[in-house]
Length: 65
Image 1 (tube, one colour):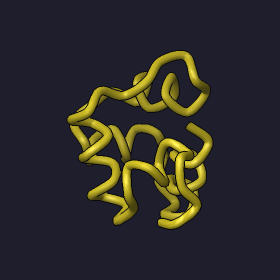
Image 2 (cartoon, rainbow, N blue to C red):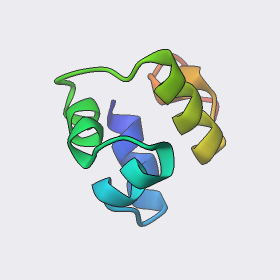
Image 3 (cartoon, helix red, strand yellow):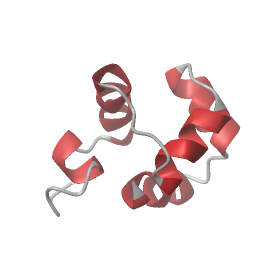
């Protein structure tokens, strides 16, 4: 999920800081960013809400935030 990395960096957040925001580990965030695993729907919703984007944008299905 390259968009997750982009959004995180736009906000100037570390992996740990984003993990704290959505209550997961920095390792989970890292794994999602490099494609080793994917967030479940609860985390997708939390990420989309936090970054104020659609889930489709977050997963690369749309270019409209």
